[in-house]
Image 1 (cartoon, rainbow, N blue to C red):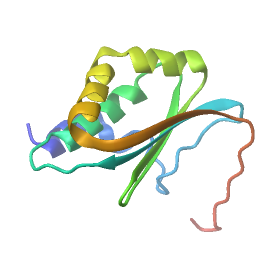
Image 2: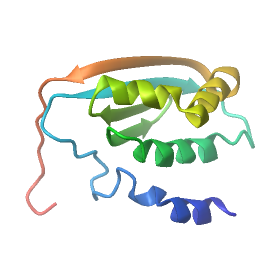
Image 3: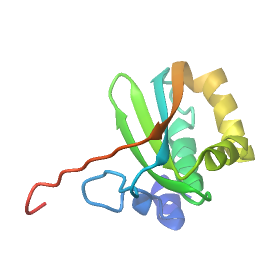
Image 4: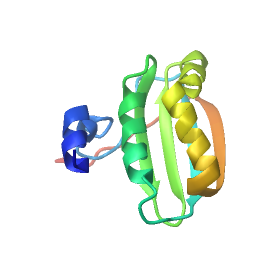
Length: 130
């Protein structure tokens, strides 16, 4: 199965990117944010992109998941949003996710930081006509 085919099968294109602006649309606070910042070591054929997409699809099906935003330059930053700390802990314990974490430490990342924060306030802006 090609990457495009499994993305379509899993509905990856719609996961937390269903809004045209690419931003996660979260409920009123409070809720939780998991901020993962990483510096990758890129290796041809390392299966990182495929695993990343599978984890995005799997996370979106977890109880308490609210959305995700990602940005990649020299450093990749992924912020996932969760209803509560219990949901975050359950996601951390997920067997597929635990294996991806292991692969990240042993193969894909030169360094990373993980931060968990409670979101107390949130504000948004959308330009008219967008």
